[in-house]
Image 1 (spheres, one colour):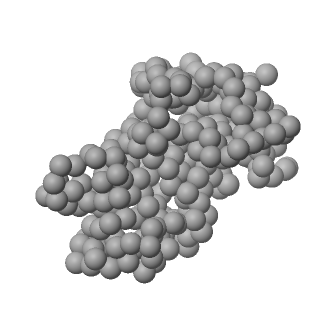
Image 2 (cartoon, rainbow, N blue to C red):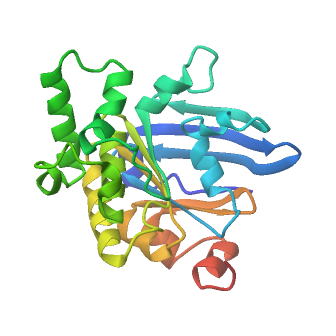
Image 3 (cartoon, rainbow, N blue to C red):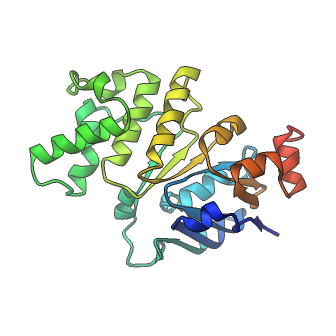
Length: 265
């Protein structure tokens, strides 16, 4: 039985951005996600934690239909963003991914200039009318990713020439350049050193003022530092979901307690 704490006042006061109900994911005959229901609030960081292979990244990919790119994947149930069923036939997955940006585990800048990395999304989605508007989007996105001052004098240089931490912040700038409403992050710090990790975590905290941020992390310490709510996944099920401080200090499910205390993982 999925344990969902939806009673704390902080979440009730916030607008629910994403509502998932009875979500199942199959990869061929493998039942990867089992009957997951969860409400994700706007302007909060929600962390998905759990051992490797527990389904947290699979579920994250459901939120912008990335699993559509896997031939053997099948998704059942309902996921809504602002009350709209994102799996409805009329929804264009490409346009959905402009609304729901994603940052991956390994920084993956395009083999283009820093400027063109950020400008790519606004260009292909027709979000700007001229070069001046595009320049402004690029600058604002890089500012929000806390790297404008570092790169403003070398925007024509390749994004692949940046450090690992800078590349990941460039990928965040690229994700937010399409003015998304939700930002998904799949272990965004796992390939970074501690200093770059601290910069990304600080950035995540700043970004939640403008976005609903959902982060998958293997680091319980990171979840505790950056998130307001935490969901614990195990064997494809959502075991427990609630306020981060409560999940880490007073979990209701023994499996959550065992994972947090290191008895398995």
